[in-house]
Image (cartoon, rainbow, N blue to C red; front, top):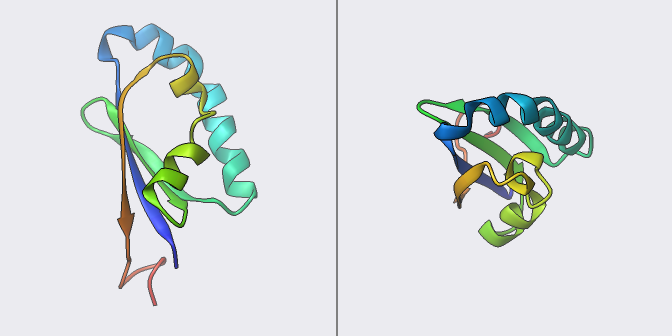
Length: 93
């Protein structure tokens, strides 16, 4: 299974903007889930997020999330992706 873990770091100085954009961000992620592309997502402490998606490469994972309202609003200060091969658990055997 081709899975990538995408890590976000948010601009913590813009807490009000983060709160305002969060509903659109979650709607965006829900649409990816409905398409079968999103496996899981949630916040990381402090000030970040982990988004697990189906992708053949790290680049593909980042491109998939290019339209995320958090990113388009300039609230993501850093993004990175790593390919992940789950062995045990709901995404593994």
